[in-house]
Each structure stands twice: as C-alpha cells, then as structure tokens.
Image 1: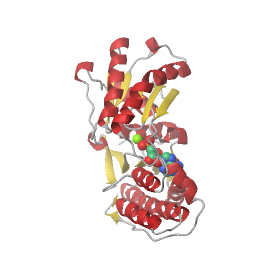
Image 2: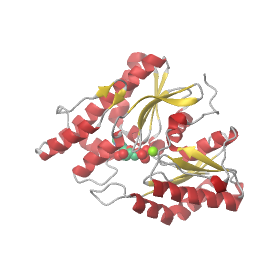
Image 3: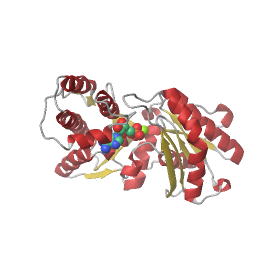
Image 4: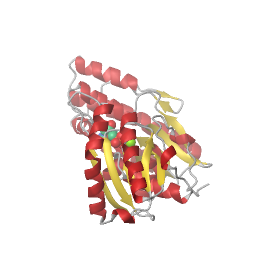
Length: 327
Ligand code: AMP
Ligand code: MG
C-alpha cells in the first residue's frame, strides 16, 4: 500500500508486487477560488479524509488489511504539514500491521508509474506537474536531470494564471479548455537557457495582457503555445544528446492534449517512440508511491518507524535507483 500526501492530494493505493494497480483512491483538497494551496488547510483536509480513503482502497482492491505486505509513503519533496500527515498515517499502519515501512521520492513515483502504465523501459522523461518541471533520464544508478525550470513549474504557471483570472486552483484543465477556443497568438517571452526553462516571465507578461484587456482565451492559447514549445525544445535536445529512443510524458500537466500533440509530432520527426501516462494516473496518486515502494523494498530499502522521516526538498536526482537494470 502506498500513501500519497505531498500537496493537495491524499491518496491510498494497493499495487501487487508484479505491478497490477488493484485500487487507487484519492481525495483532493480544493482551496477557495482565487487562492492557492494553504499547507495547514491541506494537511487538515488530509487528516480528515485519510481513514475513508484507506478504507475505500481496501474495499476496492478487495484486500484485507492483513494481506498488505509493505507500507510506503511519500517522504518528499512536498509541503511539510501535508507530508507529516501521510508519514504519520503510514507509520501507524506499519506498526499496527507489523509491516516494513518504505520512504518514496514523489518525483520518482511520477516517472516510474509512467513507465509501468505505458510499458516504457528507458525513456527521456518530461515530468511536468504542480511541483516539478524536469527533463530526466536514467543513467548509472540514478534518474538524472538534463534540464529543469529555473523558477516556477509548468503547473504553477497555469494555476497562478488561472487564479489571476478568477478560477480556482488547480486551473490547468480550465486553461486548456479556454485555450482551445483561440488561435490568436500574443507574443510572450520564450526563455530557454542552456537546457533549462524559465517560466516566470510568461506568467508576469500574461497577467499583464489580461490586465490590459486582452481576451482570456487568447492569453491561455498563447501561454500554452509558448511554454509547451519551450518544453518540447529542451526535451528534444535531451533526446538528441542522450540518443535514447523513447520519450515519456508524466505528471499532472501530462493530461494536456496540446502538450501531448507537440511532443508527439517532435517524436515522429525524430523517429522515437512517444508515450504519455494515462490521464487517471497523471496527477498525484497513491499508485506512484505503492509501486515504487514495492520496487525499492525488493532492493532492500526500508526505514525503521522510529527513525522514519520526511524531507520537504528531497531532490530525485540524488536518490539511488537500485531496481533498474537498464545501462
Ligand atoms: P500534480 O502535481 O502531478 O498532481 O499535477 C497537478 C497539476 O496539473 C496542476 O498544476 C494542474 O493545473 C495541472 N493540470 C491538470 N490537468 C491539466 C490539463 N488538462 N492541462 C494542463 N495542466 C493540467
Ligand atoms: Mg506530483
């Protein structure tokens, strides 16, 4: 069983040791319209819903709690108060069921769940979510960063633009819908530095365009075209440099059809395979924690309950990935 609680989502999932997702249940905290995630409010939400989410996961998976073999939890990166609720729930389960406790890096969860659900083996991965914007590939024992955002993430860009326009967070899906109603491009800063991207200039400029009276549809269209073209460019450069043959798109923003289209057309031009995580597993969920917990435990990873921990800024590229056998 995996417990996810890094930000707005409290999730519990049961995954078999051979990678079948038997249950994946979540309850998402929704901030007031115009606000972002309030960490304390989100953590309160998580502690209120935890028992229901876990009970539903057991029921949906048709599993008795005594049949659970490993308890894994998202140990970071994430919001401290939210991480602590998930860790406390996981510790309690581990003690009660007398099962090993496995800390999981949330970003690696997004990547490896993408591999599991798409059959991707050794991809260049574009991870785009509320907490991450990274281009990564596995090499010599770790998932390594070949590009990332220098400031805000793609999810933050969309959510903060949405909030400025009066929509509630997360706003990515609303922005996608609005963008599909326009094809009028307004110039926005295209900022690629080396193989990194800077997205905060797009946010500032697009908010200014809205304040100057430009239409919301045109602004959303232009933001998507600019930001997604930048992400496609850096992903393409990483693929060319690394000579990998697969691209994987994962994380909450992977639900976006326009981003998918751009990456697909670039992949076709380069003759590489393109895969995208199914929409129901794109955003934060327990399955990304349960599956990596199973992989890591098999490689000997676990932590005693008494010294278990959470780390708000736990980077994925420092984490040993002993379960991968490619290169
Ligand atoms: P995660 O942090 O992985 O749960 O992903 C959440 C992020 O995905 C939020 O920033 C959402 O706004 C974003 N998101 C969800 N659906 C879409 C969509 N259709 N297009 C773009 N972004 C989206
Ligand atoms: Mg996430």
